[in-house]
Length: 287
Ligand code: GUN
Image (tube, rainbow, N blue to C red):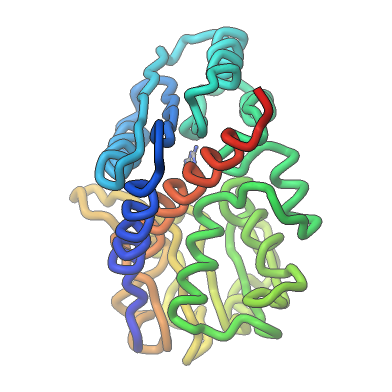
């Protein structure tokens, strides 16, 4: 079994981004982090993103908005950030309170500042295999992990459990592309999938992204496969666990990501990379 050390791989990427950013002449890239409400996990993710910006030399602004904010007011705030020429990337932390429509928010962000890659235009480009859009950070981070570890993807059966707009759907769209490092046969499974265990047992690469602690058990995997755990769940005892029962699955797997220290740090590193890309796009735009 080989551990996929996302923490180390992400740290190396941050070092190289830091170097590239230090070479920029003039103003530095600036990421706006918008958080609605005070959900503890979301606050902690925003803190992690802000610290990563600090470490690599990106500017960041955290915009904290109250849970009760009207959807219209949030959209106005986004529009203000869209129009601000000093802002290169805009991220609105998900999930949002129930009264705010996620689609309205993601569609309101200027596509060229949409460092999360959630805007319908960017999702559309990803699905169509068009270059030049933003790829959502977690799927992009998983792709980089697979490449770095030289895990074969082409022609392999990738089973993704979890069909979220943030991870499952865009990851399926990415890995199925007719491109180097992709060309996978992708099954996008979810809570209503019949014979789930049969599907997961046939996976050369199994991606667990359903948000159910320790859901993937030893008997659900193919021996010798690669296991990518996107889950971050906190137990009653306060311990972080993934969607995979690491202790029992790891001995059978050829490659496996730990939680924490697997996919999580890669998501943040990809956000930093996308923000630098956003900066380059902003500079190219006529004013
Ligand atoms: N919530 C969980 N993951 C993400 C992410 O990648 N971006 C945003 N904006 N919210 C999230």
